[in-house]
Length: 305
Ligand SMILES: [Zn+2]
Image (cartoon, rainbow, N blue to C red; front, side):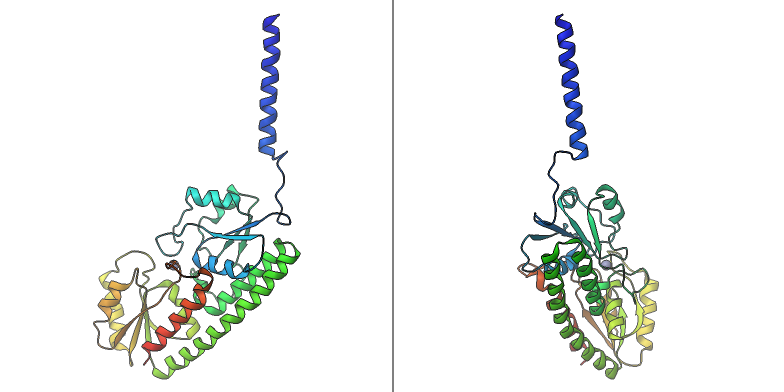
């Protein structure tokens, strides 16, 4: 008799445990989170997207923007999300990404988090360079990314928030028109001066393309590596064959050593530009693009004198 009762209790306990597991995994009993009623968390993949996200959601109550942990390697090349990143993405409603293959981990994230809405700012871009997804370095393409992000966000967000995002997009794109005007000035001055360019950073091909600069040589130092002697000597030959002066576009992180070597040639100036992927202490993250892209253009302008 006693053992029958304990058998019944055991069965009841097992049934109860099974019920808990079923409700836990099916989500039954959990209140469904909606973007109508609760805070919307937008997570961005790296710093240029974080800046974009902050501008599009500026002053809108009930939306929070967070960035994934910033990789030490510059852009997202070979980057894998950390455990902390995955935790943040699990809580996120929307994942705002650059696209074009920059986020190599995106397929895994989509598989692990099927409910996460992915907003890809690079999916409709035209005039891009093959296998090069540093779109934000071209001001006009960055504007296209803003438009794409705003359109997709407006579909996902409820009415009022969607309208506010569209208004913010117009305002932000308007501010970038000033940068485009400055880019035009740099472009004219470069062609008048007859300056040629050597490029040491994959990201800056969007800069040279937007400014219509004459690229006579390049070495891709977007990641930590030492260029071969053959690569360097080929570029040195191109510099010696140039009719006018040459500027070497490079970044501080990966290209400095090679730029110094090339700058030993008589007619060469090393020009340090910013890919805007590293946060700087004390800066307003929403102002990064306008401030630092302007600085890039002024740096090139200064080197053309
Ligand atoms: Zn890069």
